[in-house]
Image (cartoon, rainbow, N blue to C red; front, side):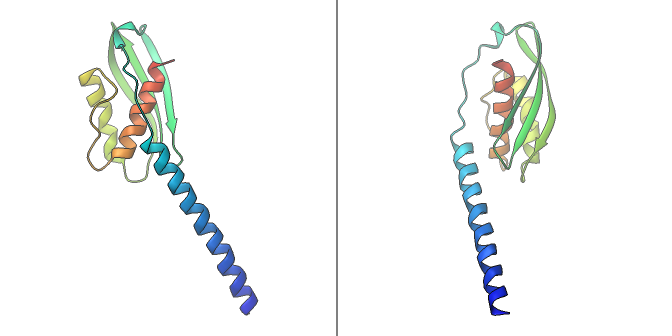
Length: 124
């Protein structure tokens, strides 16, 4: 019985350590997301798909560009931890016509991931 308990403790410790490593890697990845200064006026009219995946958060978007302006951003998929509020950031991007807008309070990481997905779409 003690051997079984010991094995269970070792297994759970390993799982916990692995999870903590994943969280650390995720936080480092999100922290290091940077954005380019994109001249939207030079992007040809069309629809562009972009995505960004940082383990715990994933976003996939469709960006519609017409007449040198971002006309629409559709969030095709958003897997998040607690960042559903960040989904409004697409409206800010369209309004300000730039990717690097202020993050949504309380959803900073999801905001960054969605913005990066938009940038990835526009840089195709």
